[in-house]
Image (tube, rainbow, N blue to C red; front, side):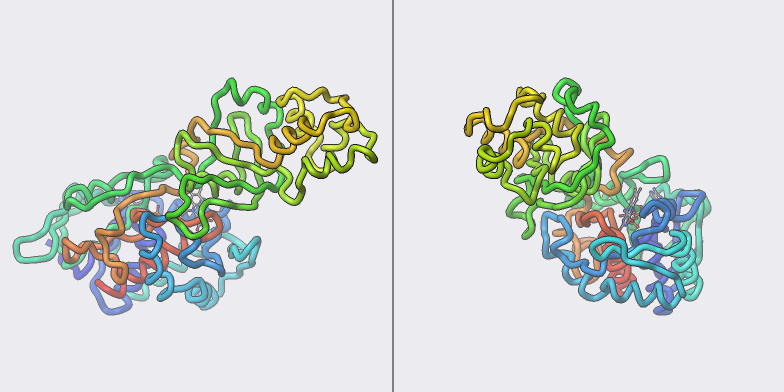
Length: 402
Ligand code: FAD
């Protein structure tokens, strides 16, 4: 039987970071993954360039039933620490938007960097390798049965991620281990995902597919649990089935099924007040007036959807109607019927309940030696490099503790 100090299950972002950290401390580490190709999620991330962190990452950028849980790990391994590692490996990078850092060339460079860091600690690899059972050994530690032979380890780190994108290897392994050891879970749900609408409700908007514009979007669903609530100014994209783009991916993480989202399609403008004020001076047709601020196709579609004639003249419309139109555009309130699901979701919200884990070490309080890190845990980052920063920080926290 092969014996190790630490067995890390899942060689994704968090697992490789954890294995490298523990191994460079002198621990004998085995890193196990069932996939044939290493770290596919890193490879496809950020459109192939991996948005590997966000220089502004802090606890307010994460959702969790316990928003305080992530503070310790994030403060002990920061975006600046990861940037220093990237620089040490001479990987070129640039800032794209609001603190998001991307590789200049390819996400492969981040995978190679993590592989090198594992090699520096002499991490043993088992890949592809399926773990069929994990049990506590009578004499302490754990026994793992795998299709490449049994393993004994003092500590086990579960880094198998969430449920997003099963075709590149996502499984519920982490959740099943949590269940086996009677650890509570926060219900997993697709997050950072496009939202869909009832086809009948969406029919007037199908033709707008492809239109993109900057909006404010919010939902009340998560208020109180997160200091920032769910409110973002980002780009919105109309699709055939619903809404996508960064604004919607962000709000999807906060959205609870059955509740509406509220979109301000012209965030810088009080539309009703502007239209009422302009009645005396603007002689144009309503469609032309609106297309100053909105793509013409969208302005027309919105007017028709709200029962306005395209050739109605602003000056002829009663104030009450203009207020109605203002509200429809400044506070477009719509209730999605669902999301595009785990096939399209960038991450999974929910996971192993943080109340079961130590925020310093990521170890399960009632199962000494068993750790959970990365996306498997109920800590979900915003779009923009935050999820990788959580993977690195939680991986380092466990890697230093095992
Ligand atoms: P993963 O990286 O998913 O790794 C889990 C590993 O566990 C995988 O290698 C998997 O094969 C393995 N595994 C699963 N089940 C088993 C099992 N039963 N046995 C053995 N091994 C198993 N985040 C950002 O911050 N920036 C981005 O640019 C970004 N882009 C993304 C783009 C896409 C398309 C997607 C889907 C996600 C993106 N993310 C991004 C999110 C980010 O990839 C994840 O949050 C992050 O990879 C989570 O790290 P992890 O190590 O917890 O899980």
